[in-house]
Amino acid sequence: MRNQIARLGLAWLMAICSLGGAQEVQPEPLPRITDKLRADAEKLQPLVKTELAKNFLSATARLAEPSARKVYRSNDKKRAISQQAFESLSPEQQAEFTLRDCPPEFYYETSYGSPLVYSRVLELASPHLRTRAGMKLLDFGCGTIGQLHLLAHCGFNAHGVDVEPVFEALYSQPGDTGAVGSGSVTLHIGQWPAEEKLRAAAGAGFQLITSKNTLKSGYIHPNPPPGQTVDPSRLVQLGLSDEEFLKQVAAALEPGGLFVIYNICPPQNPPDKPYIPWADGKSPFSQEAFQQAGFEVLAFDVEDQPWVLDCFGKLGYGEGKSLEQLAKEYFCWYTIVRKK
Image (cartoon, rainbow, N blue to C red; front, side):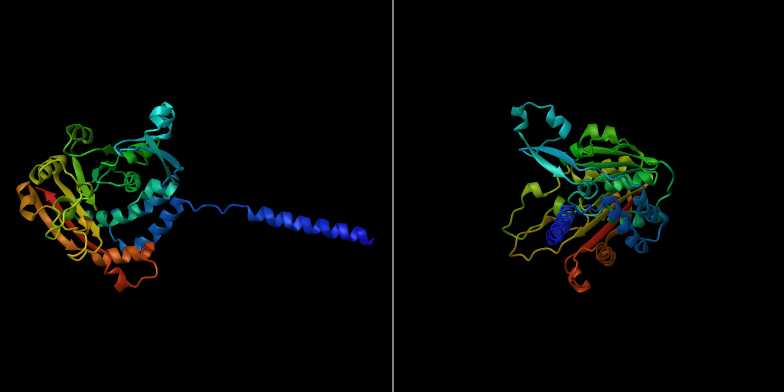
């Protein structure tokens, strides 16, 4: 009897250990990026008032959950290809590329943070827009497809422009571009509007052209302290003069169309530290330059730090820091002009 009890006790103990071991190896389910975006959109809803911005945030409910993807970038950083394209190469050709694993959150946020901050751009543009179905919008320096998909779900024909070759490979699967929701998404890789082929591909008749965190004065016209130089690879090359760039932007807009520049920036370093091009977020173009290109200036280098601090606080950026601390780390300016 004693041996039988011992055997039963040993069996019970082994079962418990086995069960515990099985529980220990169970992987925690990874949070879905679409769930995160929906939750963040709910937090930001109180910060926007216009119907357009509210609809943009609500469109997170219609975003598709992306899969993890593999992108292969050439060792000279000039090209990027999808996994399917990589597998079709010879071993010698494959050696010219380096793998980059892109988790689902990279699909919508890449390295630039939440696309939901774009709701502020729409909030500022909305009072000057006559919204209608099928509106054309172009986002210069889009940095991700996230806001383009949200715009498409709001009925926009959304065009994104960026020079980063990784995006062409990352967003190469069915459903990434083309018809999305009640609108569409088109991605252009290269220097728009400097490249004629991109101008032709994008076309004209845009109601809204935006640039968030790309057209910064420090990127276009850096002004480092005496004795310092700026690495050209850290700048934005327009490929055109200021005058010609603004002329092409105006040509792409329909009469009454808007051009919105919105820039969030860190503080600039003191003169004895390296100059930060992206810290100078004021307009790279003067009011006179806008006017000469045929624009009416509606707002010029207006500070928007309070909204950014509220937004970043709700998104959890700078967690553990006080509002006073965040106010020393983030600055913002916007400019809005309208084609006459």
